[in-house]
Length: 366
Image 1: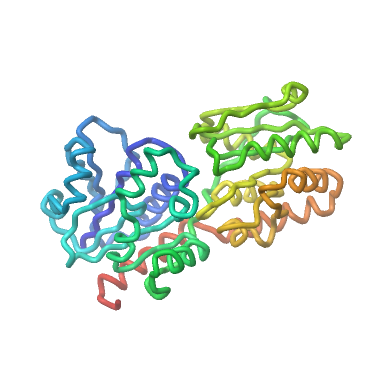
Image 2: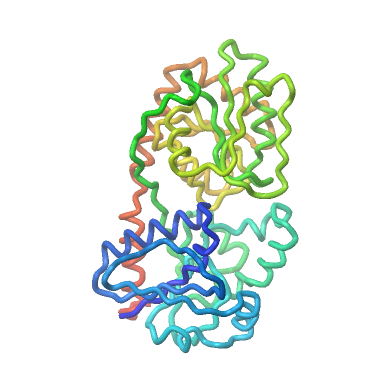
């Protein structure tokens, strides 16, 4: 059987949750399945750099149309994808982008979150227009099956779009296995760490406000490192009296990210909404106690090992920071619980469950 996969999300070269999900899922899927044929598809008039997937049963097809024109044409239902890349038996969209497809071809879509529906204010006006153009509700209705990355996302799909629960499969992403590093160029006594995209939804301002409260009460006064990738509309203002204790690192690469996880004392992540929350589990896999929000999928994946706080109350975050600093027994307990939980989230399992879903559809069990 032939399975076509939309890899357009990889064209931007970012390393957000969607890209991490797609790259790791595909490598593990192709290592697991040598029976089906896979067609990876992207579209760009300009030269692009994509991750390499060198497997005997995998081919990559790049159509060459101007993206704005192509997206509009796809919205209008032309040209059908199978006329561009050849026939296939199943279409997989790991992050929905408008695709013209013969309705007889079954489609599987992964939904990572519905934050654009719940909180459009967390996006630029351009992104809000883009989300309306994507018409996620229609895509969800059209899909043969939907993969949700958490029970929280499944519930959102049912509540907001009215999708039947038996149409949605919850398949958790994995946590990437990371080789340990040894470096000495960071704070030797540890530090509190925020790592993620710089954008309003991540609530970084609350991290700084909480740290100011913590700093005033702590005898140790551990530093704070705020790191991640550039987003939008987040101008970080660090009070003058904290500038020597707060480090901001933008555009952090994979190696530096590992260094930060390995040298940190604890992880602080008071996000307002997450579809899955990769950073929380990544931090836990490195043995970091986690301070995070009790909302969306975070409460689901971190329920056994996190100190939960109200993201609207920096004083709670500060209190949790002090608690970890002063209670070594609690600190070690959360370290152990987090590592044990993170080990259960593997990409091998994600790929196996995804392949099983594909096989059931191809064998007409739905």
